[in-house]
Image 1 (spheres, rainbow, N blue to C red):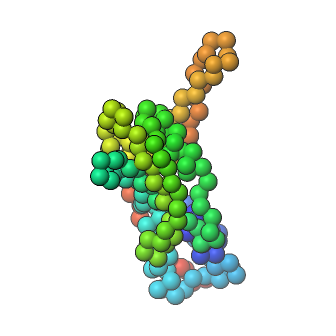
Image 2: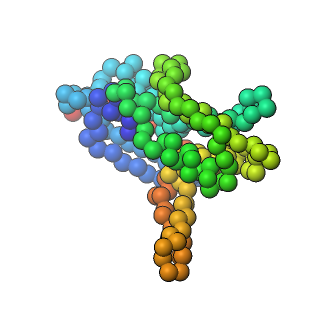
Image 3: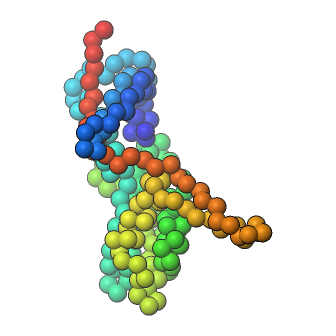
Length: 186
């Protein structure tokens, strides 16, 4: 959890439980790096809202029109330490390859959006004969690949039978989250 690392907070105990109708609850028992509890209500509220934002929408993916061109935009938050998430560009290009969508040009830059720094990946899609896949499918495919929800088929041609080998990225549950920061007096 990048947010806790950014705020120099340690998890002393965590619990994840499923609720009715696809919702889930995460209980995190956290302490500051010095081992003391967070007792200031304004800090608790700020941390709770930041965690909620990070869990509900950890990155942003959009396919937009730029005049006659179509562009894929992916915005990924940068940690306060200045490090970005590794393999984002790899996952984007792999998802586009799986969707048979070609790349004409790609750029990566860092931008401030609100109070956060983001790595923004701008990918100009090649529309030789028009996009072979609807924009919503491109967004969904890239989103799933970046979140680790996509199944990747890899064919090894050096095997005698050219048998496909499946590399499965572990699925993450999609659920509604209820994030609360509470402290108890001991």
